Image 1 (tube, helix red, strand yellow):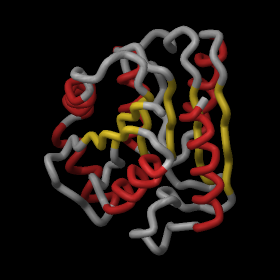
Image 2 (cartoon, helix red, strand yellow; image 1 turned 120 degrees about the vertical axis):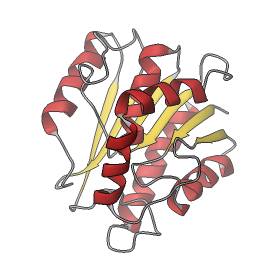
Image 3 (spheres, one colour; image 1 turned 135 degrees about the horizontal axis):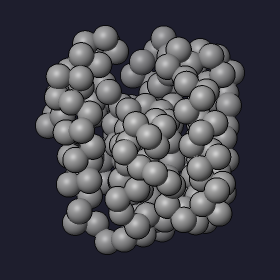
Image 4 (cartoon, helix red, strand yellow; image 1 turned 180 degrees about the vertical axis):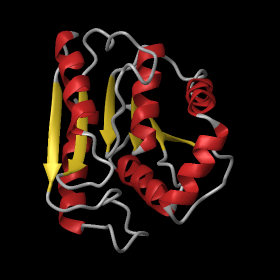
Length: 191
């Protein structure tokens, strides 16, 4: 059983995040959802992104670290979209057992980090044609992880959806890809 800090996407803690936490809990993991928006939830990326920009990414990063300061070292940091970047940031500030980036990777430079933490494994999950996918960030972070003597598994899924595991977003949800993703994440968290 792992302790997992789960960070939401730019849309906030939607039911898809709660469903993900429940899925991981059903496998015996202790999951804590980190709500950086104090309950605020959005239905569209444009409005949500404007809100996040207004709050400021440095503030959101500090909120991310503050939200997990009570957790003992060795937890897994995981997150969706913007939350993937938050999980990376936390990993550069805390001793974590692993990082799971779900449709969200930010360059270490954007996070103010010079290197990936030594030996911390990671997973990266994206659809091939995700409109928010930044391949150069995925490549740079993957290289940094490998340079830190850690493993990184990059999983690509068909389609162009962003939050494809979120059944509350019917235009994005892909049941088959979602099931495969959770099999992979659950195996990572159990290792």
